[in-house]
Image 1: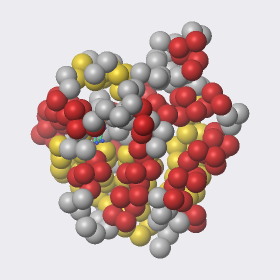
Image 2: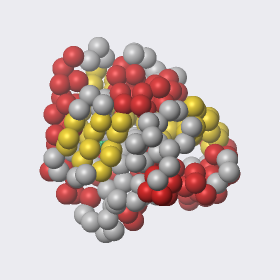
Image 3: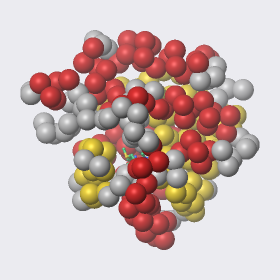
Length: 235
Ligand SMILES: C[S@@+](CC[C@H](N)C(=O)[O-])C[C@H]1O[C@@H](n2cnc3c(N)ncnc32)[C@H](O)[C@@H]1O
């Protein structure tokens, strides 16, 4: 494996404005999504995305998904018959694909263009039965932490018994090189931030370890397993 792949994807710049993302051209094929030269999403993640979809729809109801990407998890969530499926996407080119998806979806899709954390400001009560967050770090400063900023704002919007899960392979693909196990990685790099974001310890149910097969040229992830965090709102 090349040194570049061993160290994980490091192409993010420091302190660039997240708002620029909306107008960046998206290079979309059936296999890959690249924005601003970043490897944002790849088709090999399909089984992994399906596992997130199965988890987040366990209670049925209204699902909030952040980051449409190639629409893999969105398609999988639809296959579990949500009552409503709200999807937030920040990039305008990808959003066009989301509108096409909405037009043929079997179950109600509510597409919203914008940055997930900003869009959340327009919701004010616990109305989601499941939340799946899978966006992309928009600068180097937030590479390992943007999910926690989102969770702090979205956890109050989860209904009692609701399920929240998230994916940040651009972070964990790098962090996993420093930890022997996913459990250790989760306990040291995720758990403290989740508690700080206001998630009660009792709601943090741990992780599922899922087998994946990234191709050798994938720039952001080169491990044979990946984690699926599980948060369930008890009270
Ligand atoms: C990894 S892809 C999502 C993959 C998707 N789960 C799938 O199965 O194809 C990340 C997506 O999140 C979008 N995105 C990045 N930052 C965002 C943000 N702050 N809010 C909303 N969407 C964002 C990107 O434009 C991209 O479409």
